[in-house]
Image (cartoon, rainbow, N blue to C red; front, side, top):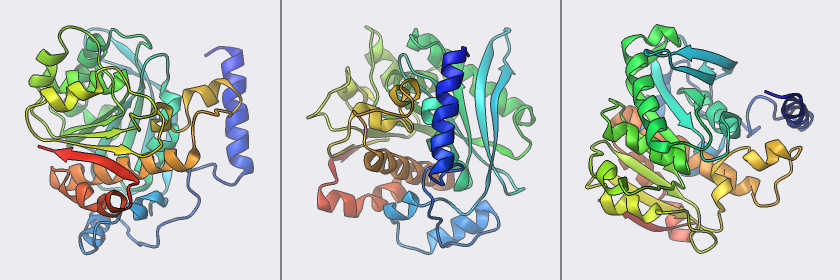
Length: 313
């Protein structure tokens, strides 16, 4: 990381600290009390699914390991940021992939928030301009590596509950990883984009549950976003978030990291909406193997029009 980028990240971190949100993007903590992820799951199952609950910081503390290098088979090396949920028991792992010309740091707050809700998170740095099929294959290799040797990350990771998350072309990389046989529980795609003549072939091979959380296509449509729902044969659910821009699916955005915390194209309110939907979807998939719980939690937002264009098959 060059000196200018380090300086920018330092300034952003200082601003977060100065506003009292250094550990997590949302300062108010959930009133739910839980000592372990299992207790948390039990408490949430006894409640009506509520998306607004996931806007709050979860009940668990989070520890962070930045710029941790992982060495994969074949001498592949990946730079990562690891966010560990505090409880001692086994917990799911969410792997987050950035999009084009972006970085793992653009998903820091999302990863922190997920870990506060009892799901370890790993933000990975892959080549910024692809090729995205290649990045997907690297991701599939990473999943296999973690499933064989979870202790290489942390002994508390449950290798049977790995969830892939990708933004923009990173969403396509996550889908390619599933198509290439990554044995993940499924994927959550943050306003995904796809490119290349083999897009239909890869998406038709996806056989794991997929949730697509999209921005408002009336403001800006990502390339071939419609292909995901069209070509994934089953097990896919999709919603759009009213007035959200493509960059709102990052938190913080890459532009803000490059411009001393300033990005006029994003809204923190909408970024938090993406965070809450992502957290609900990840919790749903990691605890039930489906997105049914998350879909129910979206009900109020769909009724008010905050979410729209909902569909699933």
